[in-house]
Amino acid sequence: MFLSQEADQFQLPVNETGFTREELEELLSFLESNEPVSPNSGSEGSTRAVYSPDERKKRRMKSNRESARRSRWRKRMHLENITDEVNRLSVENQQLKNRLSAVINQYHIVWRENEQLRSKSEALWAKLLDLYWTLATMQSR
Image (tube, rainbow, N blue to C red; front, side, top):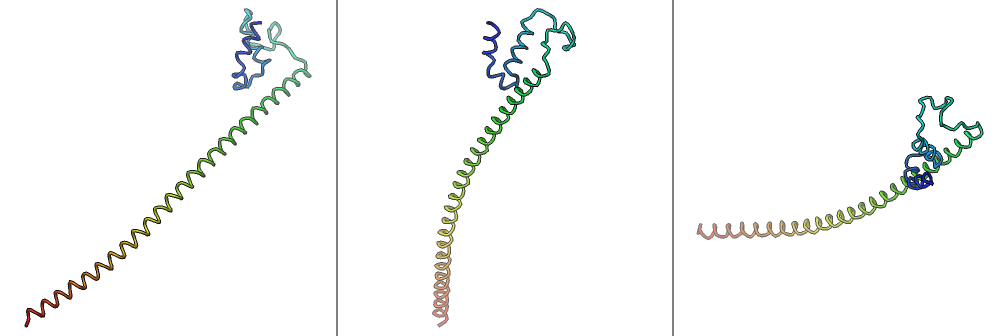
């Protein structure tokens, strides 16, 4: 009972660590047992279960399926993250284009105003020179 409750508590870490539920239960049973764990895990007297070649193949296939499932999930999450980033950058790009367009429009307005001021300045200088010339001719008489 304790073992299944413990395994249920570790549901999320099982997915994160890559251990299958059975592997986690086996690891927990090692921890719960009072028997010393032998450094030679495959030797006689070890508490580790010995599996037949068929059983090992089934476990390996199951483990590979789980690994492939996790890989597909990571790929899907990566694709979603990239898609979100593309959408965010597209919005930001459009905002920058709008700002650039507004600045260019403002530039053209200021440029036209500057041209008008230059034209008025030239006309005023011409009047001023004409007044100086008129004043000079009046004084020379």
